[in-house]
Image (spheres, one colour):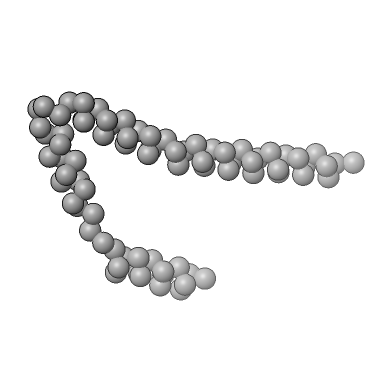
Length: 77
């Protein structure tokens, strides 16, 4: 199992693509003094993108908690 994980991790590292182009584009928009509305929009987009994974993990965690609690109460005599 560890060997398989190591090979997969190595493949991801070898075939990683650089993503610097988007960062440079965002920086150019944000450094421009005229684009304050665009900067607010980009900041809001970052917050929305950051919140969604936490909400999904919370929902999955709650479902797992509820199922474990439900199975624990049904096993008791």
